[in-house]
Image 1 (cartoon, rainbow, N blue to C red):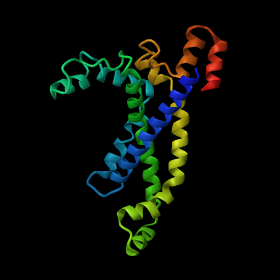
Image 2 (image 1 turned 135 degrees about the horizontal axis):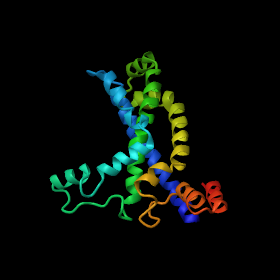
Image 3 (image 1 turned 180 degrees about the vertical axis):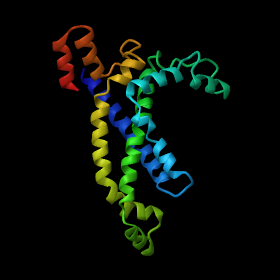
Image 4 (image 1 turned 60 degrees about the horizontal axis):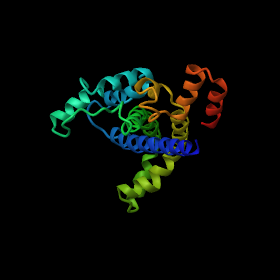
Length: 208
């Protein structure tokens, strides 16, 4: 159990870390001026605004080994010869869940960081550039300190939400194959509501 808890913690922090990095890059990209910027800013929120159950069903279809677009694309590009059982292979089930969770969580980081970037004073950035700071220096000494509180708050929220996710794992894999993708929140749910072991389910809920 201790090993599972440590593994789960590493998975949560890893997933949130990827969401932050991708969200930061996306926020910096959409913070520039380009045609139809408002449209793209709105569209990037679609994964986050979509209910998790619907996201899971969509990805279950995309990853289907027989008719899924992902396998068809990989085979068409010559990357694989045989379809990959993303959700029914013990080696790929949990990483696939993490990828789906990262995909859904990136827009939250992007929008929150974008809002923080909009509040950074242009005068401060201009003054730093005048004093000899390059783009990296301006970001490090002016932009990053200004958006750091937003990053920390958003990261904390995503850590809490990711650590308690049940719906993605339940719909995509049901915890399988075996217990390869059974997270602690999912184990708590399965024991309490599927096996009727309320005490054990409550114990797992406390541990998580």
